[in-house]
Image (tube, rainbow, N blue to C red; front, side):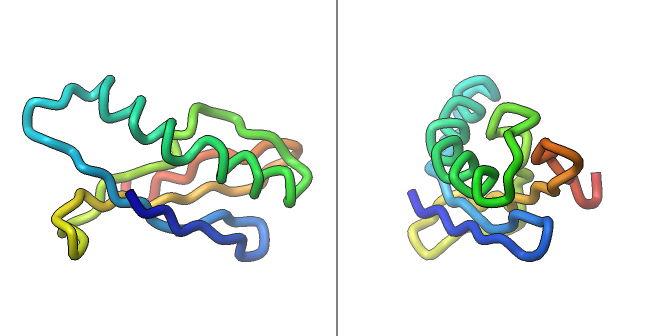
Length: 92
């Protein structure tokens, strides 16, 4: 799994790639996203002086295509609002 997240102003943006297989349930996928993202999202929220407003998987949205290893790609976007980092669901 590869996770790349950064801060741009009040936004946390990036991408994660996970091995999502056809038999995987949405709950299993969400748990995998939480495991992959929670620690890093919390670190970046702390840098912004805020806390997470939601579970980590809520910041992720699948994007077209696979990475070089054939893993499913997810865009990650969160915005600092008040004292929380809230998920931003572009295009949805």
